[in-house]
Amino acid sequence: MKKNIFTILAGLAFLFLSCQNCLISEEEKVEFILPVWEESLPKLSRWKISAASADFEKDFFLDGDEKAFSFTVNRNEPFCLTAAPLTLLSDGSEVNFFKPAGALYPYFAEGDASSLHCVLTWEAGFTAEAMQKIISSKKETELSSDAVKTFLMQFNWKKLQEKINQNIAASILSFESDSKTKFYNPWQLDSFMLLDNLSFAIFDSKYLNNSYIFTVELELLRIPQDRTLLSSFLPENQILQKYRYLTLKKKTPQIYMMDNTYALTLSASSAKKVSADLTYMPILIEDYEHSD
Image (cartoon, rainbow, N blue to C red; front, top):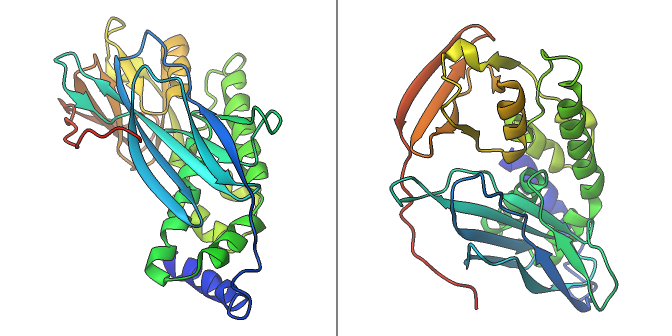
């Protein structure tokens, strides 16, 4: 996968050998709005923010009561953000369990020049992280920022995210009529195959199809109804709570949080054959930093 990314980026770098200043950018300020943290979820401690563009990468933390923050970005150039919610366990220890929310600029920017903003959503976290991985790969190739920028601008990121949004919404709606449907979780995709596809700047919806997915009834796991079970991908929790179903990928261990204390690791060979392992949630050990 990395080899393909490096090959494509190396080819793009050649375009800039004689024109290093051919991309001239203007800047604009964008407000990024964090998702609402529901009171029914574990207490939010802080957010870990990861921001990236072709010529910029930064990680920092925000307090849990922050609602939004701003960045000055190059106008109309790909810029992605993820915001991972760090939460507190019942004993007050901090954990990094939930998948991040994400935002993709300029594809989902709203408003005019005086009030431009992007809303981070849980559905976009996977795509934003995929863009970050491609951006990070340039460090190993020592390619110019302009080469990476051109590569990112070739791909239809908006179409990719819209298709993921549609798949998630359709799977949730289908539970109303078919309890045996499968919830669509983009984090269960074959990320190696998808990134390999992205490395050629080609969009094909077939790479967004989840395979070897099972819908598992919580009753099969003998989990009492008074126990609280949470998925790391927050949109899945409405299916867990309303229908008492979860979605597993064949022979791929998946961790759920139980009672804001334990990590329940599930692995399935079929919808009826599921192994379970219960341990304490791993505690996060990380320096505390604030944004400037």
